[in-house]
Length: 305
Image (cartoon, rainbow, N blue to C red):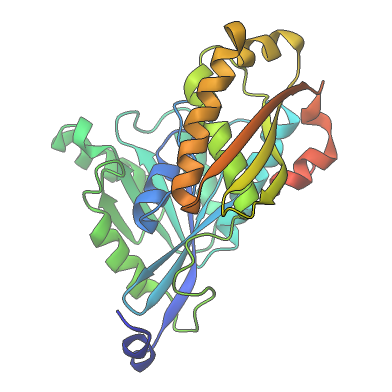
């Protein structure tokens, strides 16, 4: 659609929050709706820490999707900051999409989340994800149970991974947003700075490689970003862990593990940047980084007292 076509129609825009229990598929759905990777996806729960915004243009509407951290029972300071951020993202949005893992149903964190939705006054839409893994009868029962617990405007059944049902969801959201000018240029898909997105990609590769062995308390920062005269970019990143034993895990035997992580991250960053990337990874021990206010600011989280 050309800019001239869009300008003849009444443009719509707004913020749409994605909330759900950890691993409900929010990041996968965000990437599917935006049509590009803006949020990391791993098997490890709670990998989305701060709010990530993905921008989708659908007809004359610009939808700013807000991928929030998974909502769960917090145990540590970082957990509390993430859950507070998630609820804050929901309460600031024009529309809230509530994602449920159809396989897991309503239990644990999902049940607690539905109970807490009474405090969210924004219009809410229920999305049942991973429907390709569940029988139709169970889906209908799950939808009825969830709607009985919270007031949803609509219910959508989708597979975020395969994309089924996502076009209908986009159509509904685009029509539901208020009229108004767009917030971002038409070709922008995220408000995440490239340095931060590159760090997130490396963190994804780290978790995909070591999710069974590496504790959740690890963090990646992009420390140097240098555009070279030949059109390539040199990136230096630091992987922070809390103990020497974790550093050994990340490095691996003769540095094989960190080499594999770096190769996977470099390939994906280069594809996004569309330029050659020289990526250098370093591992440092920073004890109790989860209690450092500066780290929270860098992740876009409010430091809880």
